[in-house]
Image 1 (spheres, rainbow, N blue to C red):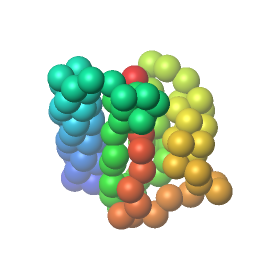
Image 2: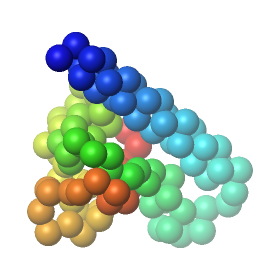
Image 3: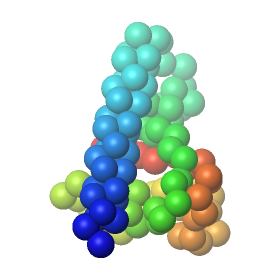
Length: 99
C-alpha cells in the first residue's frame, strides 16, 4: 500500500514539475515572439499534457488549480478540448490551462 502511495506521489510531483517546465518554456517563447492575434494567446494560456494511466480529468485539474476551484478548471479543460464528457483515457492529449 505504501509503495502505491509513493508511486502516486512521485507521479504527481513529476507531473507538476513537467507542467511548470512546459509552462515556463511556453512563457519564454511567447514573450520572445510577437503576438499575432488570438492564436498566440491560446498557446500561452495552455500546455498540452498526455493523460497517464490512473489519471482523471479531476486529478489533472487538481494539480493545475492548486488552491483554486477544481470544478472550474475541469470545465475549462472540457471546453477548450471540446470533450463530450469529463472521461479521459490514458494516452489522450489535452490542452490544460496554465494558472
